Image 1 (tube, rainbow, N blue to C red):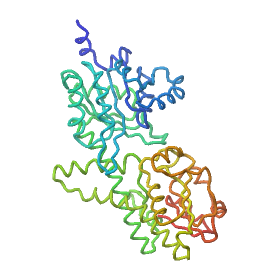
Image 2 (image 1 turned 135 degrees about the vertical axis):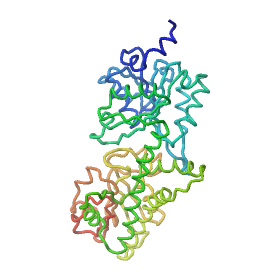
Image 3 (image 1 turned 180 degrees about the vertical axis):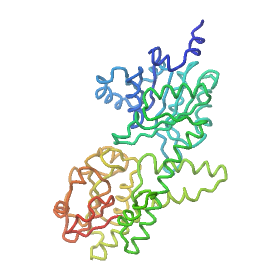
Image 4 (image 1 turned 90 degrees about the vertical axis):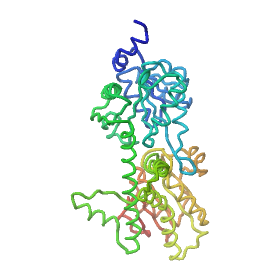
Length: 431
């Protein structure tokens, strides 16, 4: 029996568990790293990333504790694998159009080392149809192999929540899909090795892609609804926080809150559906509106705060503001699509002098991405303090602290409602 026949007859799970081949994870960011580490508890794994500095950091950090994983930035190492999981970013560009550059480059890389009997699984978030319309033709063209006959493809949407120890890769239920029943069985078997919260098989790849979109679009729409209600109730001098608490006494009320929408998923995923809907001639006003509402929140916040300060006699070009928090989420260093950067820009546009601090963000990354210089500590006193994110370091702060860095007529804007009913000596504003 020749090698090809043996390769196609032996199921991929058996080859992995017997360490006859390797599993490769392409992209070692917040999704790919935990995937690679978890699989390395059972299989031999190659963790591949084009960023050599990132790879070197991971070698030093995890190399001794995870013996079955090899971190590499040399793509030729991928030739040792037969089961590829692609976890690269799928952002939007400056025009808010889907940017598949990383996904297609990763696909091209894998295709160069694809052999008969291999599997490629996509976890990157994409619009329904992307895997079959964009990725599979590229795999076939470069590898000169045919889907189904020579190799298999699956799609399993990532659900990892950064800085959430409770919802880890291993204990989040996993959706899997594949190009045929045989592949679906094998992909399910491989993932079941590491996921303990259940494997759910989608009937096809498009359904799995659409499920991921639906999860995040729903959140975007619900947050937009709360943001819209907040704007209305604020004009009516109604406390939105109390409204939500009262509404939550009903058993089927879902407790979404108004706020800033940032990061890599919620503000991005709806935009992947817009060109698809346009191409198909389908109107999606709710999705479009939710994006517009959430994008408008920085302007709404800045306008509201400056109006309060102006009414109290402050001259705008004399206002000194402190922006506390540039990451999009608490206790992480991720600054992608952070709305705090838009608040900064809008304040500067109004001639406000703005300082920015954040104990988690990397100053070099902040400057390179947004051109904002992060300070190591505040430089008081301030007329305006805006707390945008609920870092643990910020939750512990109290009225005495804010008074110590403020002018007598200062305004504290508490975007996350961390200090409600705790601030006594400053003017207070929250969503």
